[in-house]
Image 1 (cartoon, helix red, strand yellow):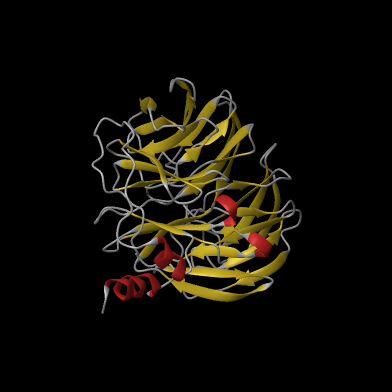
Image 2 (spheres, helix red, strand yellow):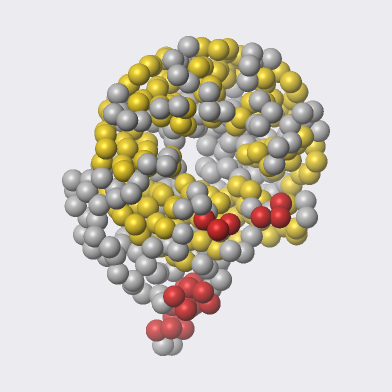
Length: 379
């Protein structure tokens, strides 16, 4: 079997399998400075296109890639718990920086910065070239932050809510929580909302705070045993899944419950809901199911059950009402009210998904012999 056939077999194992293309080949400085541009490796551009991919980026084995973040310009992710990479819309590396202890959760992209969570705090890099701007150590495992005004606001596994200045990394405010937060916070751009659960799993809750000051706005008790991360809808509803097997919608202003909708499973902290247009929310639960709910009433508009489980990475919304959702066994579900359900198999587990530049679906993998971040136009 010649080289081209061998590469294509690897590419076509599954739509997410570990093919090789423009990835890291040059050594990376340990100082956090950007790495030099990488040269293409094994697979050619034609081979990548033949596999139905727009592009594919390979991490140096055996490193796993973390949850990706994307906007209309770039894709950002960590790998190996010590490197941060930013790719452009075509999958070409803009820069790469090193910092020990980077977490495998999605970075936060701002117009000027890429803010990454670390095992001991937050680190910000200049988006243009990867220069480290600040490195704030708070002694706790941070989650993906939200941006509120001039602050990056994050929660921690150890039970803190923090507001950190985007300009200088200074901790502006800090608020203790009754328990740890494993999932990321959510925001409407003014307030921050977080769910938490005590380590013994006997007590859990949700709370909202003013983003500028950290002053608590409200706090409510939530049934423990599986509390999902929150999402804030355009109409001001805070939606999350509780351990009582219900999706809950609370009012962002005062925390009162607007509605609840029964589901088939409890929540997962790193599997938050996502808004679908101005009036619907897509909610995922731990048993690998999806429910599309009306944000005003909680009325179910569509439902999908699978035989998988969901632990890391929430659903994402694609073109024409198509949804993508990672299951913990390495399958990715593509489904929606107007499309047939499809399962795609990765070579191992999926770290997370993102809607990338130009409507691409971006997927990152972990735990395989070769881990990749790849983009496909086929939703």
